[in-house]
Length: 338
Length: 203
Image 1: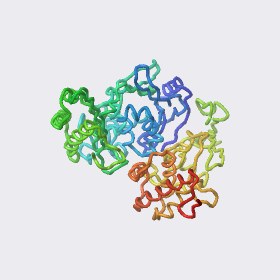
Image 2: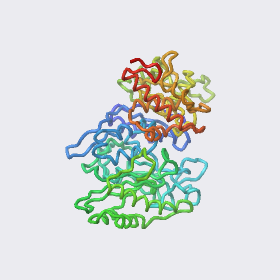
Image 3: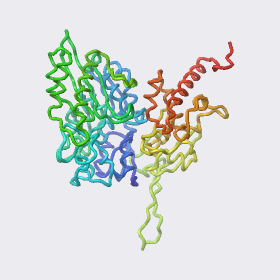
Image 4: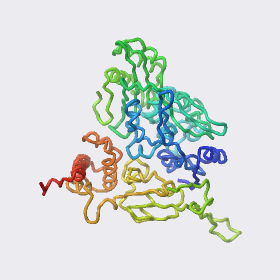
């Protein structure tokens, strides 16, 4: 880890002022990804600006019937928050599918969004990586790419965004509140993270001088019919090979509304509105779910070691939608897929 | 906690930077001693005032500055859980925690769990169930389990396994670890309810 300077931000305006004054600085909150990356010399900030004292730790109901989650709410507190458990169990389940309880105690809500989209080569400073060093090449495309992306890839990068929580937030159409030198703005969740294109060093559309202040969940939580299913190489505490967040609104035996987002398959949480639209009006049965899965995976492209993910994703989508339709969501402590 | 965190080093006495030039010889480039920060920590009930460099992890501080070597460095990347301690009552990976950010916090390590010569129920349960082989992960396992019990979320063996997955045991003592934690949960519940242990119970 490189030596660095350290300072604390007293309020949001101070945080923005400090980061604007020092382009080589980074914010730190939970630090679970940043410190790890610094220990591998992947990231070498000249200064860390400690934002953990900012007043961004509340979970509040909004006037519109949604929920506003402060950016510094720890992942574990959010997963176990009574309003999240009751109204947004998909978010709770997704958070508990990720990392370990120690890391969830440390990691913040905003930091979960801002953890790096990554792969093994991004972490290995001895290898070329366009994300770590733009223009150096991608080691994964012709390398060991078992964990890498199958959707939305580019010739520059096939890394995946590893968050579970973000898959649920994408499905639920959360909004990201940010503050910067020119004031505040709101970014729709789908617009927050980026596909790699030819600029894979950029994981998201947050401007360098901006800070995430809150995540807002809309009123609709799909609490009755949801499931988060995570498939991975070991039974707990591993990144997803494929994960699926499914949420259905079923009325009179037909799907009135559907949400479907995938993790572990792309540079960002992958949501497909066409697949969701194809589910609306249909009976919640295997045929409908299989069609949606095929539609979502139509453009999927496998590499030497990860083509299995396409079939895996298809089956996981069907299974997760079935769990959601049957109101039998996957329980994260149960290692039997329901 | 520091009630008025400073915007930059040296801007108040609590947050004083001690950066200084080591070399007095103008012909040689100065070797700059790193800025350190006055950091207060209560560790196992004992108060400490320490000057720490910003990159010092809580793990290194515990082991190298306070000689509390019960907390182990395993992977040093938050993947193994050997460094688990209780920070303000919550289990965290000390290897990914910067000490400077925890000014005013309270830390409990494996050395702080027993009451005098009386072992913590988890320590006793790990012995009773032979829940370790080499022992390297054990202090992290026990601190993590103490956090788990405080959280109150694990009722079944499945839930214990899932919520303990941040602690790796390469000897594979997992079945015995789960059994030990189940025993400790029971013992601590009995204690709370005023019951004696399994043996020698009073009416």
